[in-house]
Length: 397
Image (cartoon, rainbow, N blue to C red; front, side, top):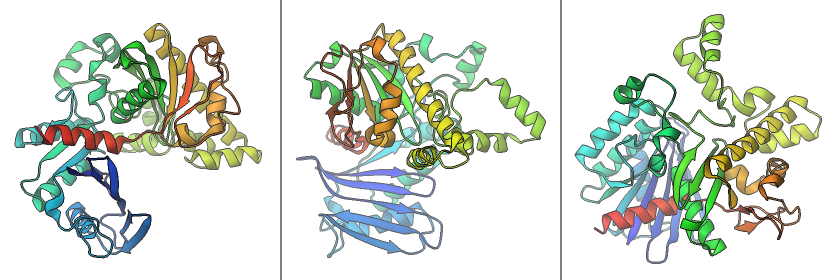
């Protein structure tokens, strides 16, 4: 079976073509700047790369371009579109309606539209991508894989907010959590790497990147996570503020005469380590600036490391201890200094970082000392393969 994995952002489309017989990635790529005249497609296959710059007015044209290049006689990897057996879509928000991946039907599409109110930045482009694929590949099974579904095992005491109960019943106001596909992949992977059944492990996975979240996985199921009703909650991130006193929102809006949209932009796009440092949302740039004596860049890093460490402690308390802490995503997999700073002070949990072992990037690696009772690991995430696996399973039924 050959599966096309599609991840649509507001102006981008990431794709992978996966042969599920051996889970080999046949080709992958990225379409950027959709709607702009200088839109670009970067396509990679067999160790080769091709770039195309041309106007791409919408996602439907982007999908058509991707299918054209996948079947191109020079840089394609399949003879025709008919070789694609199913398409798997990343969908950010599935609300309470979807506790697992699902075959996309007309009813499912209606439910996705309803969930858009809870993820107005993310779900609409996901839906556009699905519609584009359906239009160009009628009859090919389409599967939705949700960022939220892995967290649907959280108990009410973990997902409810201290607001009037009616807001939950009527408006679905609760903690949903995100990065679920990544958290699920890492939980499966770490059990295999350690050779311990998932049911016997208490895992804290740290998905650290421009967007960051932690998940507490006990006995193979998620019992708590740091993101909330939206991906704005938890530790401060690249451009997002993370957890703040909600009264600050009203105070800032009043004092600066901001609209709800302007306040939303301030918290989502202008805050986090970018807002604190005034330098960048990229942790590599911050490390460089801090090394050159920029105090605000150092403060931003200190805040991030401190908040991650504090949240690890909270999730360890929620599970009554922790057996392994995993680091994944851009910063988690590659930020050697970031991991070292986060782990400083976790010794009370039995987690002691080995400085030599920690000198590693982007591969499965044990980074704690041999005598650590709580292990520390780097586990590169692979959301695309999880989407492909779910798609294969559901489309084969």
